[in-house]
Image (cartoon, rainbow, N blue to C red; front, side, top):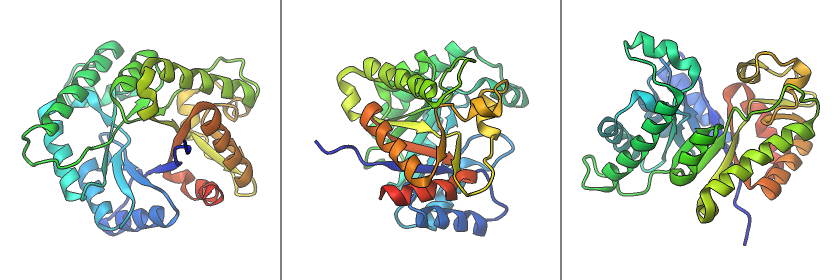
Length: 291
């Protein structure tokens, strides 16, 4: 059986105008990306209008959320918005959901909402997925005439079990590693353990799951300094040297990184990679090599 094709997703954080959103989307499509996503945080643009704008400016690329904070939503409300965006993007919408990270607590306070425990957020996410899928699959208005791919992102055991049961794509993020990390081999081993956990949790369903990795940084040789903001968010106490060994920190030549991704596909079945826009042009060099 032929290997699952690679897919690449880029998250756009913001723009100052409709024209700039359109320009960024067109650039991502031209660079070979398959999906353009936006996050879901207060103080940033509302995801769904931005996705519709970018879909109108492009021809091939899909648009999606990376990721909606599931704890903010109820199924009837989410089903309405998901169905609307799916219709208005001609079926190019991919729904990304998460349970809500710990650092989102100030957003709950700003909304006047209690901040649930991690367990409560994950249980709510599971119910939200089940109920929303049932709603859009039924006699829903607006109608949904095709499957809407579901991505779930995260790294903890409970969340990955939910994802293994319900998601089409699982993007591994925040993979736990020890403070003794001092080599790429240690980071790779941690990635392999998480991939195997998903495989075990999914059972026979694993063959239908697209497994992915949230890329925290890309350092292509000869292309300037790397932005460590995202890896440091996950591991604030690690040194710069330790951060380079984290799963999801891609470094080396474009050809070398491409070879790494081929190995991740062959060994761990990982074929979906998501980056933020600061790494968009660097990863594009890798995409060109792979294709």
